[in-house]
Image (cartoon, rainbow, N blue to C red):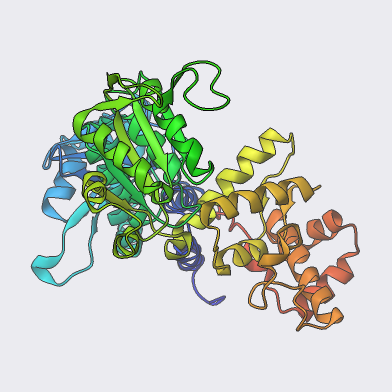
Length: 528
């Protein structure tokens, strides 16, 4: 590669960096933004942006940019302007000088007259991989760059077409995200992680995986109705959080959301909690008390672990759903209630039906709109975004200055099977933040349950020397990342000599060049 021309070397190295950003564990939106930044820094592009087609509106919308657009939201009709023409035809367009092209609209970035006179523009289509008619144009990848000879601009065009092919699958996912985000926002919902928009009203929902995006799509569909929802999934998957989301996006959002964990109280107290009681109804009932059905009037009642209700309590809940009436314990007077019911369970209600422990008529009443929440092990794409979300939350809560999670710790998080689901991940990250006294969460900050043979340097199958070696590698890689591949700076940060760092790099076969941000060579002045 050293014998190749400098410009070709830069193209190839940039492609290597692009491929590095497109790994299977990479969060979608951040990795695409990082890719745009790499293109801008390596080639001196003034602006780099992705415009993505929105099938709901039939327009192109700027989805991701390296430089902030001046207009809040800019859209293009297919065939409108250079960007719209590229989308409509599926063919790249090179504009040697912006001010000379009659179709260049200059909508999004408010380029000055000097910029229009001194900048070129290249736009290439992003097309889904597929033979012939099966391929589909998803949007465009466009750059602003200094005016250059036509052959040089053509080289950049060819390079950008290769990049567009490499990121097509990620752009297809981003297009899905934007469509889902529009649906959720219409219902007052939002998510964080891999979504292009920010500032959503429910910042605790992290959904990067397709299964969870489908769950949130179901939430958006049912939230506006008064239908009873049954949330099903293992303990710790976030059923209560989704119940809060449904209530927040419903017309009842201004009223109370009342919650009861049916497994947390003995059966003799459940009925009193749900339906209330009159004074003297039983020993200890020294005053009348409203039940949760009354407390949730015109709002929402969330019954967690409904499979734990006694058969007698089930009969009364069924009557409350069917007749919209309840009776307090110790009273014969009926009280009309207007409550939207959300239920949740981790148990197989169908097995309870067979065993006679759950009423069939109640089952069909609450199973109007079931939503199945997959366990965390079946949606690994959510693990890292959630871990980073909890890291930020607890670092702020405990006033810790922790910036990131180390690569070995990430590998450990990704290889664990998470029997406790999101709840276990949350507890794991809280513990790590409490133990961490530096800027990076490392593998030894994670709980012993995560110290597996696949991901830990402290596994008992390793000798003491091997464990120390793995720890050395982790420290060295982190220092090189921070120093952008500069071994001298890494040695200063580690407070050891350059000779030791050089020796360890060779010993562990670490390539410092992988962490180097390639400097853009200075261009020779273009002949007049």
